[in-house]
Structures are given as structure tokens and as C-alpha cells.
Image (cartoon, rainbow, N blue to C red; front, top):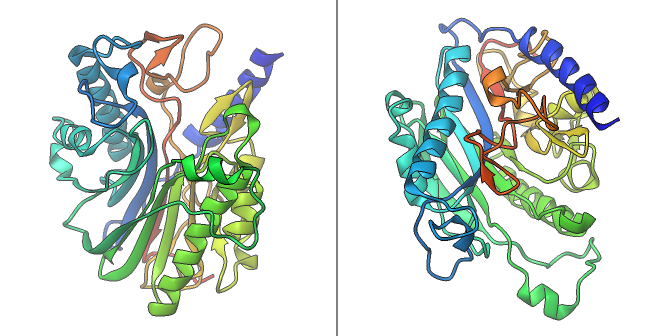
Length: 366
């Protein structure tokens, strides 16, 4: 039953994803690729003081050697380069998660496959106990950073009842949310990059809802200060676009016609319902690698940047996958080809497929 479900979803993904992707608009228009990629435990081989990174040391559980680390960097760079080859242009902005520190990002952007892009880095060390953070890679030729901040997780909510004691709250650590504000193609944008709390043990729905609420509150503050700002929220939300955190607390809607001034448009919500997936768990496909955009990116005049459909002139997002990124045999055939399996290094890529959207001045007024 497991393999039948995975096979059915894989066929849907291949048909809808690989065969129907359309090229970007003509380069005479201003068009930019904005994406997110969970890099699945991009750790170096050194211990970071105060972090529980011991499994990713040469003597640790994963026997994480310099050779494995270099292969991992190459594999991540290969995927990012493959997206450039498909789109004929590098990402303007790429959010990433599950990275240990700035050092691994510097090693990544200096891979031979990525040197041409000249990616720069925005990263803050966060409080996660394993040491994994989120970050933003960007090309300074198209995106000018004006400011950034690392937003901590708090329990200061009047809307959410938490299933934790005061002691558990005080001991809780998770990834900060990254916000980067700047000019993309001369227009003001803000990018939020998140990796919301885990689903381990089937728990954490209240925590993910709080994470989404924090992002929403910060986004509304930006819209109050800069009414025309265009906001993109991206990340591994550990929830689907249909889940409470996204629908209620981030106010992310799958129908553009329903997106009001204080709402977000969720391109991957209708895609999930159509059978797309960015990761598979227990035989079911999910899209946790979510990108949403605010009202200013769906209700804007021609000549200004707005989100455009990129799959079948219908879907406004893409789950990017190629055969080399996909497990070709065994129990997990048809799912993302990950770095390790059962503790053994298998020289894969990530247990998540990357996702992206395109914003362009070449769009129809909505």
C-alpha cells in the first residue's frame, strides 16, 4: 500500500511538474526567481561550542568526515545550478534551512558550480540546540539589502493555548525567523525565512501556529511602515499549506480572488490538492516548503513586480525535482534522494525538494 501511494503521487508530480514547466518571461521584462531549499543537515566537521552537533563529527554517529561534507556541498550546489539551467537565470533570492553556521554557507557559495552567481549571505546564529539555522542567499546585482533582523520565538500570544508547562516553555529552543528588507529590481521587498518547530511525536501544532503568528505580526508592522512593500514568506513550515498555522495564523489563501489587503496568497495550497509534493512521509506527499506572498504582489499594475504563473499558466509555484534528486530504487523509490539513510551516508541531496516562485513585470493585472 505504501509503495502504491508513493508511485501514484510520483506519477502525478512528474506529469504536472516536469512536463508542464514553462520558461520564464522574455528577459526584456524584469523577472526574478525567489526560492527556498531545506539543505538537510548541512553541517561542517567541527564542533560548535554550546551546540549538540556531535552526530556530525568524524567520530560521531554519522561518521561525518571531510570527504562526506565536501560531497554534500557539491550535491547542494548541483541542485541550485540545475534550477539555474532550467530557468536560464540564477535565483535573485534563495532562502535556506538546516544549515549549521555561516562557515557552511561560505563553503557552499564558493563551490565551483555557484561562483558565477556571486551569492552573498544574510545569517544570524540562533538558539536551536542542534545549531541549525535559516539564512538568505542573494545576488547583490539585483537585490540590495537595506536591513535585516533575527526574530526570536516567544510565547506572548493571546490567541493560542500552549500545551506546555511554564518550565517547558522556559527550556524551549527553536530556530529564529530571519527577516531581510531591501530593494529587488528597485522595488521594496521583505523576505521572511522560517523553519518552524518539528512534528516529532505528532506534536507542535500550537508552536507552529505561534511561529506563523509571529511572522504575520511582523509583516503587518512592515506594511504599516511601508504600505507598498512586497513581502515574501518562505520556509520549512513543518505544516502543509492547508494546516491551521498557514490558513488561520498566516492568513494564507489559495485563491487569489480572496486575498485581501491583510492576507497572503499561498501558491502551493492548490498545488498540494492537485498532488504535488516537496517531501514524502509514510507514503503521503506533503508540501512543507512553502512560499507565500502578500497582497502587493498579486494586486499590482503591469510594469511593477508581481507573481506570475509558471506551471501550465495555472500554478504560481514550482516544486523542483529531477531524476538525479530522486531515489531510484528500494523502499523509498520515487521520493527525494536524501543524504543518509538508516545512519548510512548514501551521497544523496536532501529529503526535501526545493520550491520557488517567479515575480515579473510581465504579468496580467489581477
